[in-house]
Length: 318
Image (cartoon, rainbow, N blue to C red; front, top):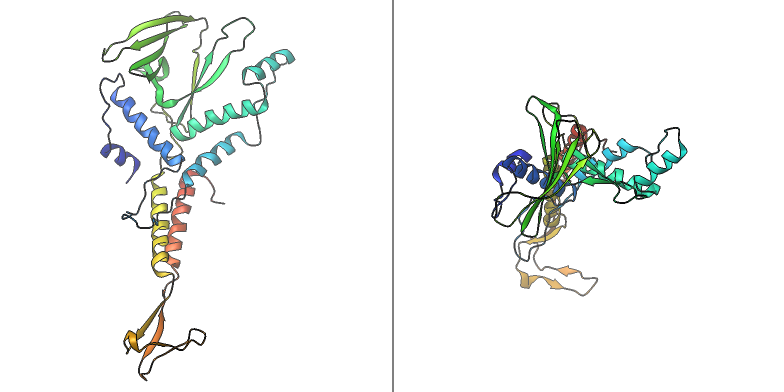
């Protein structure tokens, strides 16, 4: 089943009041499905009866697709470096990005992973709380984000909204463009069952650019939301199905079975000589029943699916 068909047939109902739009709910469900593919939580292709051994084989090529894309994106550069012609400014930028090379590299990995899986990455800049503190750069969870654009221009973003549930209440940070070119940050809460937003905190952002930045993983010229590396991940389901069928065939048929014809079981005698059996009938036959195929066609089909996934996603199958 294709991913979009899955979403159409597997809509989940939200319990109680939810401030999320239908589009936002579908987007969260889609991102959840992508994350399941990345983490190896794939659909089990074969049914397993109680007390029966499972022949399901899950080969997580989806994680490989995303991880390789991130490796291609950042290459051998372990952490971002800065050249602004001012050594003090460069050190400040390094510290704001996390201080150590490992911390800066990890932040890049988080941003790249969000984009590879969900199709769009979001980063928020938090101002220092006190003099001498550093600003914080945080990778935002794309499933919490809602973006409002000018109705005539999807590249003109007029509001970022970060919405999440905290206990029984919903909370929201609204970051709105103002007529003077600056931005206003408003924290709101929707009390349990209230169905409306109550302002809690409001703060002006003293710059003409928003504290939230976004980028598309793969370009999507007709929408703010980019394209995930896992839009073709249902091919991974076909790969798992084929591998699982091969596993089940081998479990039932890989071992030869000894067959005897022309005699009954009591007529079979053990001579105690190296487990040699004798049968007092001239026309009795004993032979091994073995699998006649080495599953070449099944393996070729499995390889073809892996090659197709590799070509479609643009990640070489090394």
